[in-house]
Each structure stands twice: as C-alpha cells, then as structure tokens.
Image (cartoon, rainbow, N blue to C red; front, side, top):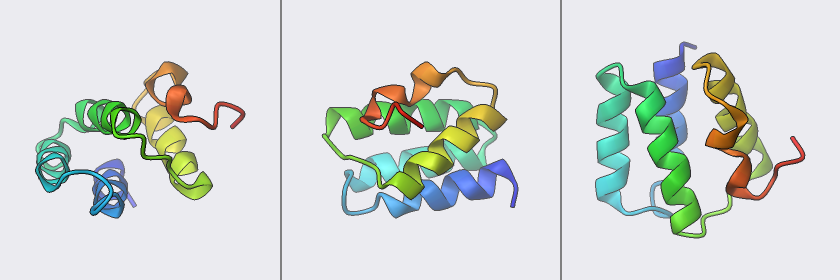
Length: 83
C-alpha cells in the first residue's frame, strides 16, 4: 500500500475522535500529494485534542513519518516516544 493510501486510512481511523472538518481537510491534503503536511497537521491536532493514538496507530504514524523523511519530532510528542 502506498503512502497516500496508508495515510488516508490512518486519518479516517480518527473519525469521531477529531472534528470531521479536520478529517476531510487532511484526507484532501493527502489525496493532493501533500502527505507530509497532512501527517504533520494530524499529529498536531491529535495532541491539541488530547487524542492518544493506539500503539498500532502510532507505529503507522512513525512508519509514514519515516517514509516521508520527516523527523521524529513530527510525532514523538504524542505520548509513546519509546517507539
């Protein structure tokens, strides 16, 4: 599965835990080849809304971050920095 599809699936997993407008915006960003921006924004809003990703979701976030060549600082503030 490519990065865009994995990211879109991940974003949709947070439906009901983040406002719908954010979910739509980040899916749109991912679909328009702005995956890095979508992932960074997703992580920021997860933190702002006190949404703690499951260990599995956090692994996907980390893998996507690595695949997009983003630093650990993109996601390590989400509460599971030991991954």
